[in-house]
Image (cartoon, rainbow, N blue to C red; front, side, top):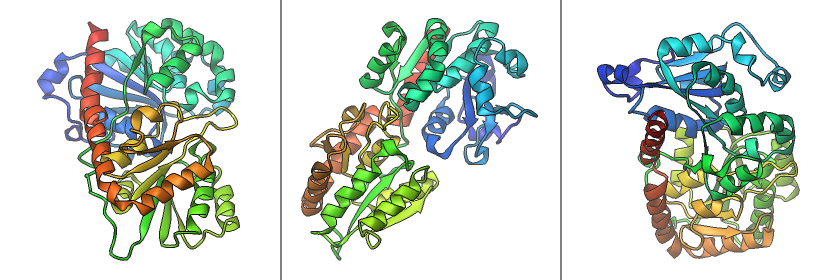
Amino acid sequence: MSRESPRAVHPVQDRHTARAQPVVASYLYRYLPLSQTFIYEELKNVRAFPLIVLAQARENPALFPLPDVHFLQNRRYTKGWFQSQIDRRLFHLLPHERLARRKGVKLLHAHFGGSGVLALPLKRKLRVPLITTFYGYDMSQRAWLNRWEKAYQELFTDGDLFLVEGNHMRQRLVELGCPENKIEVHHIGVDTQKFKFIPRRPTDNGKVVLLFVGRIAEKKGLHYALQAISQVYTRHKNIEFRIVGDGEIRPQIESLISELGLEECVTLLGAQPSSRVAEEMAQAHIFLSPSVTAADGDSEGGAPTTLIEAQASGLPVVSTTHADIPEVVLDGKSGFLVAERDVPALAERITYLIESPQCWEAMGEAGRRHVEQSYDSHLITRKLEEIYLRLLE
């Protein structure tokens, strides 16, 4: 077990008040992949309750400092081992129960469906409420669902509350067998202070920068974005498409860039920390996020957090009518939505924005207002604390 940073980093209440409050334990399999910055944003903003983090695997802890992060020590398990050990025996092997009792844990919050399953035995041993937040692949990818279907039914029966990003995710969870009265929509939030609003205006040289941020995976729709950019590029040579992210299909994306002859206008930047993402958003003019449902069923579930960040920074966006994206992007106001895989429609909307820079500032302002009202991380965390209090009472 490990403490990753001094307590001053965590904005919890004063020490006396914190000791008097019930302790909440957040459970994750890995703490914390770069693609899950939104989880850290939520954890670090919890103020009303002392918070500890229980994690099986250590990943980037120095980038996401919290005062009470604890890792399973001295054992390494294969992915297959966890898939086969999802019953009540699992936590008998782990030190988390003793730690949770010592810390006075009164509520568990698991992030991702698989983590909810793995936290069930601890919930039963401690006799405390369990909240599970679903995020996307954990409720859509067919191979994952086939493997965890039986365990999910147990989770749906014994878990107390399930949080989802939007109404599309709510319906999907109902279809998987979760009682509707146990599901609540709870948005992902972003720090609107970190993503400063910048009015978008044309540059003196007329160059237009388009930006994509996300994992390079099939569901992100980069293939279709590049095909659309190829059509746009025949008419507008003074554009640059910057891609922030990495992933399993990057070689395919690199080949497609070459095949389409886009080496001069496409820049692959690889994975970058959130500070660099904010910088890239500050310098771009248009944000692209053409998400699709992948061949294996994988989907965004809700919506990419980067769409919220882009709107917070004042970027007009072009995205798709995928999952809960229509709740996040105000079609025709903060951006444009087209059908999944509709390359001509993507190209047409991108072209329209390139040729209509007078629209950028108004669309950016609409997106910023929308994020401030519904997706500000501090407001979202206060709502989460109300959920915690309700379950504890």
